[in-house]
Image 1 (cartoon, rainbow, N blue to C red):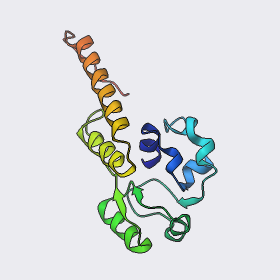
Image 2 (cartoon, rainbow, N blue to C red):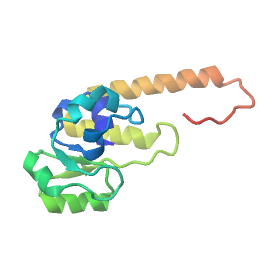
Image 3 (cartoon, rainbow, N blue to C red):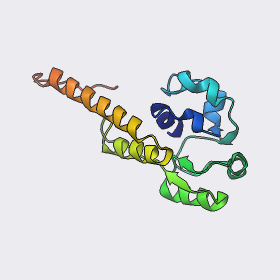
Image 4 (tube, rainbow, N blue to C red):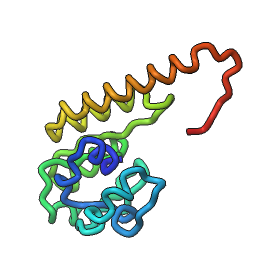
Length: 150
């Protein structure tokens, strides 16, 4: 989740470590991966990646000396990581209930606040709002809408 949001906000260059999945694989499954794999694969390994539990490598994180840790962990796991490292941890975990819902907006803004990319976040969210409005206007007169997987 962290690399994805960092890529949206164009702050991947601020990352000082990466997780196993981003270092060892380039996957189109992760929208940021084909674009930023070369940058991510050269960063120090700081965690296994994936999941909401603390699977970070605390000692490796301390060694790369980040100012803050943005973790896709639950609040409890983020607290655990903060205790292990002594570095502030901000949980950016969210669960989407609809396509790019309020949870996504909230987390993107939180991430942007931490890294100083508020203007970029608002540009992204405005673009998403415009796309949603466009899709709604194109489909508003369809009576029998089909469900789809995006």
